[in-house]
Amino acid sequence: MTFCDFFVGFVIWYGCVFCSFSKRGQIQRGQALIDRVLDLDPENLDAIIVKAWVTMEGGDLTQSEKYFQRALQQDPRNAEALYYYGKYWQKRGNCQKVLSIKELLGQVFFLRYMYI
Image (cartoon, rainbow, N blue to C red):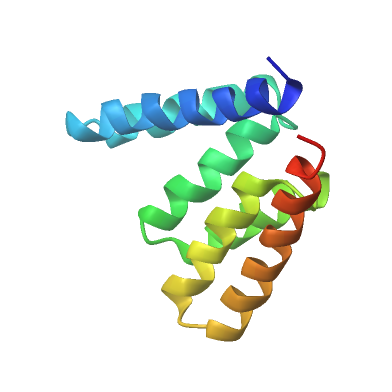
């Protein structure tokens, strides 16, 4: 298992925990879990990405953008952050931003997997 696999696993785990709470109508509990992780470790990139996604899905696009920017400031080539940031701009209706993020995401995947 590579570090990238491990990293993606954490993002998926946080996202799955949130979705589990969400499906049971307990969105606030899921948000509280992510907030608790960020209280304990404010620089936890996985939790920041999930928080950005959760706030985006909750409709708070202004707050969501702040979390996406925070995540991408830590790791400008983070595939998960870029993917969901593209979704963010899609919700905002900015096709130009979506296309530029899609291009950057393609470069990230090319660089990540070109030696496999």
